[in-house]
Length: 372
Image 1 (cartoon, rainbow, N blue to C red):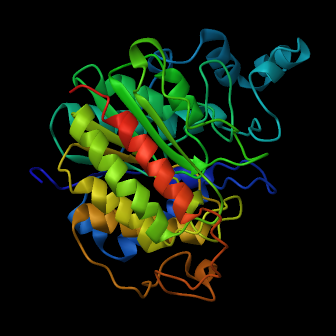
Image 2 (tube, one colour; image 1 turned 180 degrees about the vertical axis):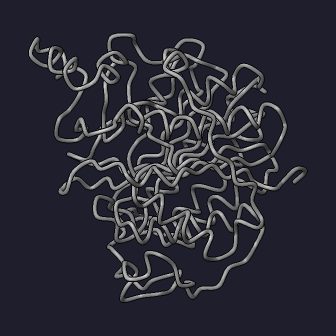
């Protein structure tokens, strides 16, 4: 790829934010990724970038004024919203707690995604990486699923200023509902989401029949999967579906939400993907040689998130890394396995071959209805 040295966005202050002792989202996991990337020496093959701070006015491109005022008004101002009963319509205290420094937290992860999009627009690189981003559940006027500001939507809006069409690919185990909702009427953004679709599994959206409306009709594809899907069966769907979309939609740029909660062993996930299998999706997307913005997302077993996104950073930089982890600042967290590919018990795959073949055939048929 021309100008293929990836731009890698980081801010080591990101790990200082804290959702709470019992909350599954741990921002420190992103610092663990950065540390492992540096310990492997991958930083020598990346252009390390500090994100340009995103100001509140940029967030208005998607989010409502009242919601942003609620997030940014500080503790005393926020209490007024809550006392009036307004705060609870915008925030879920259990999933999306208001913690110290929340406004700075939102600005920090959004800045990396938007900065990456702007560098792609300027053709400074073909690959931009922001593992702190990918918070795909946030809506225009409220938080959802550990997400406050939807940096994915904001970065896509930025890309649309210069690129004709954007392909969004989501491999988080949870449906990318916030992004789909934002572009459900758009023919310029194609939303593709591979996710667990089962009873009582958050967010409960992403049905196969949801394909967009109005001018956005047929510009959304959902791939609803049952629990336990493994590398081979996931690849059976992923590669032909993505290939067909690239062929028929002809995107100018790709945005990837690479949530690591689709990995086997994740504390909230129900899939059986290996770190290698997850990485092969990123490698396949890279092979199209289309400008790409790579974002993080879910992932609640910190050590496997670090392993996965470090492997994918190596893939994007075109460098092989050892299966044996180098010594790093979080060494003890990786015990008892100090390997890149830890051994895990495989879950039962409830996706039958017959159902997957039918699913694949139906989705491919829908894609082929698109006009270039």
